[in-house]
Image (cartoon, rainbow, N blue to C red; front, side, top):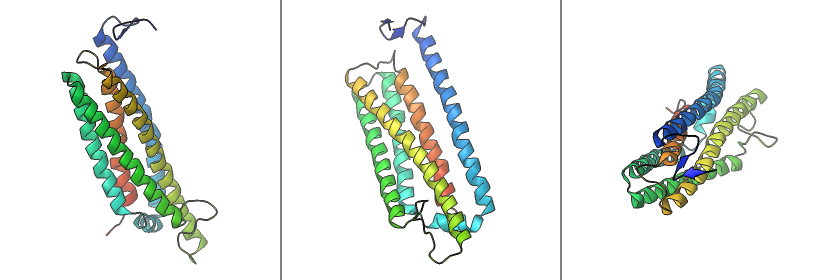
Length: 217
């Protein structure tokens, strides 16, 4: 596609191009809200139907790993925000450093989540033929616990997939920042990927209390 600098031919000005890209990202994030919203609604309805077993299943999840991951994601939001600021003021070196820091923190999150999933595998808490939440318990108890873990893996797995996509986007941003592509006049990709990253972090802020903090007392 023909470009004059970073301005694509279908746009008249850089400002028009930036606003159009931002609008597209907000529309995309709106569809993501609806997507995750359906999962949150499904979880809420089932939790209200089976509150006791959902609370018991929640207490079997490693709270400390979830809490550490929450801190990691909050820190990654900070470094991502600094990346956007650095691109806006032309601090190219700081931009690259903050993007790399964000990628590292995101990788730490995914690694911790892998450890958590392994724990559930060892405990036979992955829904399927080998699922066994409470040996000797009534079939209904294990069935309702399996419903909780189906939602747990579905919601956290989908979130982790978004994190992996975000990590791929960050790698691309880092490569482009090293080439000096982003300037105060053109930093739209950094801003839009920053919005995506913040959205994924916000989703986790809702997932953590819903899945990890049910009746912990």
